[in-house]
Length: 288
Length: 335
Image 1 (cartoon, rainbow over the protein chains, first blue to last red):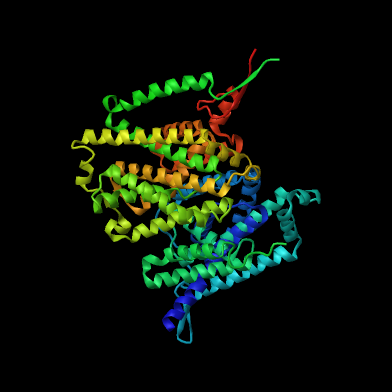
Image 2 (image 1 turned 90 degrees about the vertical axis):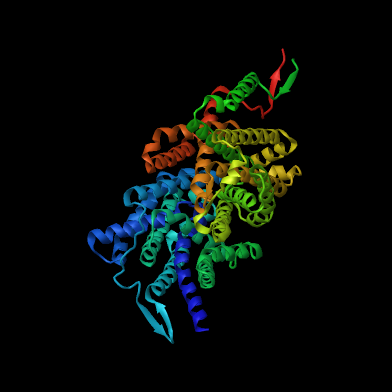
């Protein structure tokens, strides 16, 4: 019994990481209906940036965030205004294809720079530390990841509904042309949304890098996990995304408990079941 | 006033047909004039051309932008191995049976992933491909995660001698490409093709005219899946070895194919042909640079999408009003 409780708790905490993968995806889809195929590769790029920062400056990965987050945010803004804004429109193919191209470019640039060897961020012992809760050992890093995910989603929720920036996001999301008429520069608003999304990607990348080893090829898999969390939770609902991440995480740890080779497959199957039973996700946004 | 007539074929399309048939005869004779390496390369070109045509039919005409076609490439490949090894079928028969199985399995998959719209449909197809990859990796009889090779006895059924086998494999690839090209062409010229083109131009208007959009898209998805499985079978008949990572590779069987179609010109029949030739030309030139080559390919695809979204063939067509496969109608004034 305690064994299975442990499996479920691990899954819930893993779900925090998946919610972080998903939050950026959900944010940019909500604001500009863009699905970024390179999202997973950007997470891996952030992890490598964290690696370079920690090695060069000799700092802890959490401190490296002070550099990686602004750099990724800046990259997001430039990417959006320089390239992605040109792809937005009724046709879904241009953004899909351009981000697919970006994905291939990022993957191979990382391969060229860092080789295909798996790397890991050194968290200084935090990865193996655990706290005892009534006979249940809970990893410190997974617990922190989950709490950070909750904080990030609460923060995004706050930005969306309580700040002028968030009002801009919601305005362009509702109607781009009218928002433009009201004096918002939508190209700039989209740039800020992508910057915010990639700041979250930076956090996700650093936490991923401390948790497991990574290599340039694993971006696609991370994109899929994030995407599954978004769809399970329901499009356009950030708290739903957290719930989606948790369901995916629990499905994976239960699958891994049954058979280690079954971990990822169990997550995909959970996603397909949700798609079959509740095609709009578990907590879809209420349409006005 | 003069009477107007409507025609489909043009002088250019008739010339192209004659040249195309002559070219086909020359290519069919390749085992007698080409070296082994060239034969192999040409076989690969035909198979990529087929994949590009099929993806173009889905994305360019039916609006089904899939990034998960590797699911059916890998499925076709694995069915070739499973049916020859365990059911003792002839390789060609195994590939055809594999296509039927792919069509059967694509129907429940379509009912599930058609619930996702636009770009989310695209990633949904990728999830399906991952499910296929992980499932086949679990089957120990087919080599599990490390894969397996086609037994010598099965390979010998294609021809006792190596040269004969390579020629057979080449003709199969050429035949598949010709069949795919003609199937797509005649499909687009048919009543259903017209419905499909209407859907491509405006879903709302098409459904207003009584076209069952969901059903038309389903038909395209199922037929494309079956053909993609055939091509997958032929790909791994050339390679003689299969593993889950190679069979369900998103880069090899989808990313490259998408780049080919977009660079050549999406939504046209000529585009995939031009794209395939450009893709292989680029690959032969930059083959020694490995990762740089892939980055250049990604960059070219991005630039084409942003600057010339209709691709190379789109540029040529706009400039010269050329159409090699007569699909559109032209109104002519008679003097």
